[in-house]
Image 1: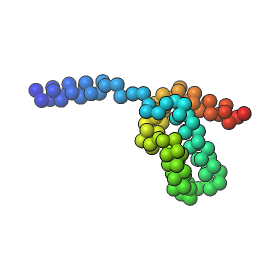
Image 2 (image 1 turned 30 degrees about the vertical axis):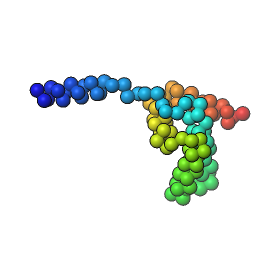
Image 3 (image 1 turned 135 degrees about the vertical axis):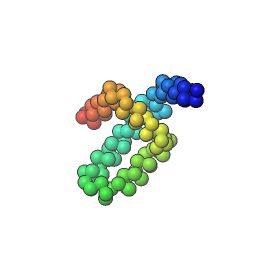
Image 4 (image 1 turned 90 degrees about the vertical axis):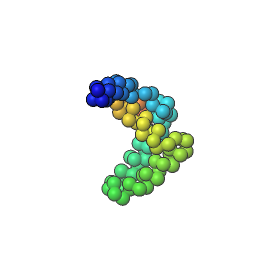
Length: 102
């Protein structure tokens, strides 16, 4: 009996929709993601070795998130959401490429 109950609980919890909307709006995410990508590009171009710039980049990213009143956890959840929704993420990246190609 316990095994059946455990199995039913497992089935119902696994069927739950875990793909909730991201905590950060698309436009705000795009803006912050853009800033972070620029920072990462800057560090890669100037230092090349990730061991040299890892701590500085993390501090810079934290500054960007704080400036935008955003937690790292919310940014990470939103990033993970778009990672699972590749078409939407590709759209964001395409928009950023077009923006910086002008």
